[in-house]
Structures are given as structure tokens and as C-alpha cells.
Length: 462
Image 1: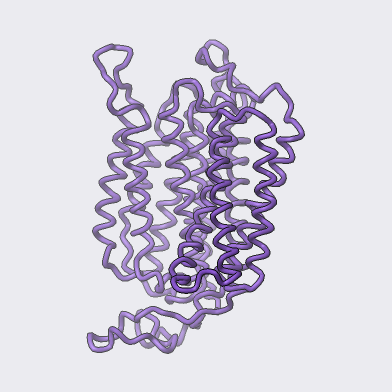
Image 2: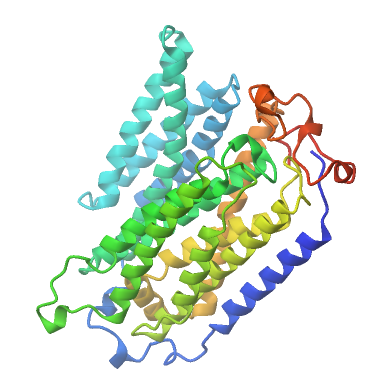
């Protein structure tokens, strides 16, 4: 695919990146009192959130090493091989399943089987057994009649396994750091669920960009439709879990604070705005993208920037979340404007500013997960300031996006280019059912402008 080098998009990407980094560094505080580290300002259960005193045993170390090899390296590679119809997929899947099984067994050998992380291991083991059994049946030819439908479900299950691996990692961190254990389960679930949803949206958007080009024509719907569905779900979670929506306010100690009201109405606004955006983009052309999600991101980001918490460290962490959301909204609006102007063709390589949208969506999810009460107390006890914390979160974001790009590149290398399946909007009523045969039918602002930009018919190259 030919790459469109657009100086305007490059300048906009640099400007948004510089502005967001300036916002992050402005939240830096050097003295511990500003971070909320004075003993008198901390809640009574604050000493409970610190690094575990017991050293990590050998069984747990072997468990972590084997599970990382199986669930991060071998099994995702096997999934890519299956999607690309690679003949070595059965061997890779069985090998990854064996390594994963050994890793789960070593995790149980470490003891402490009564927590959510250990119980989730039974689910992961059951998933491995089902996948391996289906793989063996396909390989030996035992499933022939309805093998196509079963193979589709097998592939879907493999895709969900990556999401379940992420859930297992989050549960492992929660268990090891003793988070979500002192009566703040609702707030903890809210932060981790909503943050994970934002990360999932960012990674999905990255897949769409890499596989389908800048305007994502083969998706047949604007990406805001999928983002709006996630926003609606996140809004429901935020409304009913963050601060116990149904708690009684008869007692003065149980009355809602300004933080309770703000978080609840943020959830309601995400739910309402998500419904509106779904309605506007349900039958829309991929280029007809709605700015509603971007406006919600900006409004929520501003609310989080001026949001005040009991601890200064918590306020700084919410500032990071707000700055990421504002940057996400601005970069997405710039992207929508440039696509609507016709500067970028349907199957051109993604613009740099589109990758900024992916990054800021992932970073806002990481910042939201890391802004929960228990994690803030852990950071204060560990002597980590907000600038260091921001750099840690950015590092994790870079690693996740790098990992996703590696999987996409592996799929493209194995599967090769795919034929476009999108019906051009330029076709009339009598031609609507016909597939576009050449890349020259790609949408553009005018016939004169089409010769100015190179267009490729390969939606999978990047």
C-alpha cells in the first residue's frame, strides 16, 4: 500500500503529543506532602497497601514464566496461524496448551487457592482443554459435516482467549498487591472494568486501521459505532458500581459527596451520549463519522482535570486520566475533519494522528485503572510520585500497542494481501450490489483530486 505523506497530519500529531506531555509533566509534584504522604492525611487502612513482605517463591516464578511463554507468545501466535490457515497451527496450539497447563499447575502448587486469581485458573484450564480437543478433532478429520461453523467458533474462542489472558493478568496484579480487599470492591471493579473497556476499544481501532486502511471501508460502519457501544456499556458500569448507586442517604455518613454525584452523572452522560452516537452511526457510511464520542471524551476529561480528591496524589492521577481523554477527543476530531475533507483516500495508509487516537484511548484506560483508591495508597506508601507513575503507564501503553502491531504484522505476513470487499458509495442504485473491482472507485473529493494521491487496492498492507 502506498503511504500518503501529509505534512498537515504530521504537524497535528506532533502538536497533540506535545500538549499531552506538557499536561502530564505539569502534574508532577516533588514533595511528599503535596502527594498526600503526610500520615495524618491518609486513611486508617493505608498501611495495608504496600509491597508484599514475603518473597516470591520458586513455584510462583515458574508459574509466571511458563504462563507468559504460553499465553503471550505461543498461543497468540497459534491463533494468528489459524486465522491465516497456516498448516503448522495444530502443533503450535498443542505446544502452547502443554506449556500453559504446566504453568497453571505450578501456580496452584504455590498455594493460596481461595482467591479470584486461582479460581480463574480453572476457567483458563477448561478453555485450554476445549481448544485442544477441538484442534485434535479438526486435525484428525473427525469433524467434517459442520466443521466450518465449528471452526468459526473455534477461532472466536481463540480471540477471546487473549481477552481472558488479559483478565488473568489484571487479577494477578490485584491479588499480588492486595488491592480491592478492604471494602471498596465496587469502586475497584468500576475503575478496572471501564479502563479495560477503553483499552479494548483502542486495540480494536488499531486492528481496523492496520487491516482496512485509513477510512476503514471494509468495516462497513464508522468506528464510532463500536466505540459508542463500548461507551454505553462503560456508562452503565460507571453509574451503578462506582459509588453504590442504591446506597441509602438517611444517615449523614452515607450521604453522597460531590465525587459520588460527579462520577455517577459521568456514567449517565456516557450512556446517553453512547446511545445517541449509536443511533447516528448505525447505518452510516464509514466516512460519515460522528463527533459525539469525541465531545464526550473532552467533557469528561475537563471534569476529571478539575476533579478534586481527598489526596493530592489521587487528584493528580485523575488529572492524567482527564488529560488523556481531552487529547483523545481533540485528536479524533482532527482525524474526522481530515477524512471528511477528502485529503486521505479510503485505502491509504493510516495517518499519524490516527495512531494518536489509538494511543490516547489506551493511555486513558490505563490511567483510569490506576486511579482507583487502593492503587493510589499503594503508590504513596511506595514513594512513587505522579510523574514516575505517568511514565510507567506510558511504558505499558507502548508495550501493548507494540504487541498488537506484532500480531497484525504476523497475520499479514502469513495471510498475504486480501481483496477489498467494500461496495463504493459512488455506485448508483442499480450498481449497489456489485463489488468494486478496481481501487480507482475509492471515494474522493473530486475527479481532479484523485490523480494527486496514490491509492492502493490492498487493505492489509501497512
